[in-house]
Length: 269
Image (cartoon, rainbow, N blue to C red):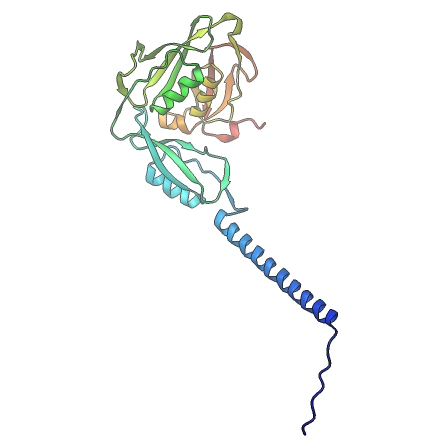
């Protein structure tokens, strides 16, 4: 008869502990690999940690802006056009986000260019709107704010009249896209002052927006000799202003802007 081989039985507690330990280690390894894989994928997908500075794409054609954007690591497309008679046809004059901001690589930059063929839009009804509501309507209709005129009234910064080229314009009237709209606003003498913002270091159009947001007007523009055209002024920076920032002025007051293309003239903050 063949001898029966005796099997040495391992204690049940020892077998269970080894099994649990081995599976626990395997689970930790698998989870770690999954976590590292997801992190690697997310970093690649979202460009985590990879940022670039938004380039200045204004004063270029749409094709030139798209090429410059690619070189800087972002994407840019012209998404709107407004006719500006002082600017060359097809030239980019506005971008969002603005130049100088830090964004993720591959960010999309939306451009607004001067229309090749002037188009017409209908004048919205701004009467009764406050100035910020009116500004939003003006921009959404492809128009721009020209001047802020104030007349005595109980309600400060509420639109009383709307004008284009010195004439009161009725809602629904067709006007050229990009036209400057003058807002006639109420002014209660008890609440008729504002603080002058600091627009030094801003580009020309951004500076004007900053003044309008603080209920002030662009005054005289003093430009360096090499700033000869409207396109030049769009590229120029404000290096000085009068009155100075934080001064108190009546709403609608003018602010003189001094323009330069030489960034070294801009005082450091």
